[in-house]
Amino acid sequence: MKLNGGAQKPNLYYPFCEDDGEFATRMLAIGVRVGPAFSGVIADARKKHKMWLSHIILVKQLSNSAKHWSLSPTTSSACGVAYFKPDKSQSVVEIPGDHFTKNDEFTFQAVDADPAQPVLTLIQFRIEGIATKANCDPTTIFSSTSAHLRDVVENAEKLLGSP
Image (cartoon, rainbow, N blue to C red; front, side, top):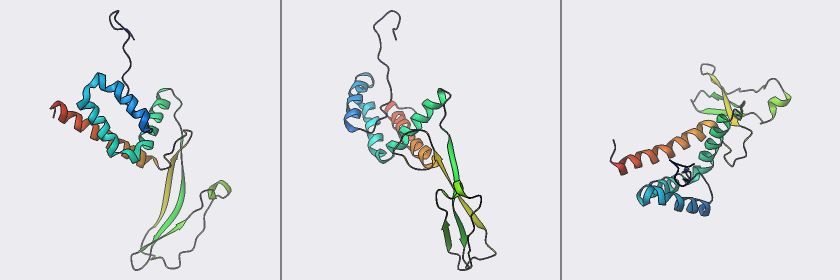
């Protein structure tokens, strides 16, 4: 992109990447534009949330797929049934992952269930269609990404002296 006939300006993208070497390379390019203090904010947030990087990258991929009208679908299925025993402890009966591809119902016996307590169906959601290492439900993916971004914004506000 040229600005008022001037030289082309490189795009400034947040460094979403899992590889430490690639991150360091991207941070060098970003640091020239945003300075060492703000580069530190980004690096600190990445370090703090490193175990969730695959989730953060997945949200970025979902965002990109949505803006191109090719949103990846989610699937859901019952993965278990939970019931309470008379002593108030909970018991869970797992439903095999492929059970409902072959069957329309799941039958189980809970002879030790407290009839006064509810029986709960445990539901599992998955995002499909995007290659990722993040093998977990959407709630975890979005909450871990929100925590990462909240840290970046809060620390950037402190750095800039904003409320």
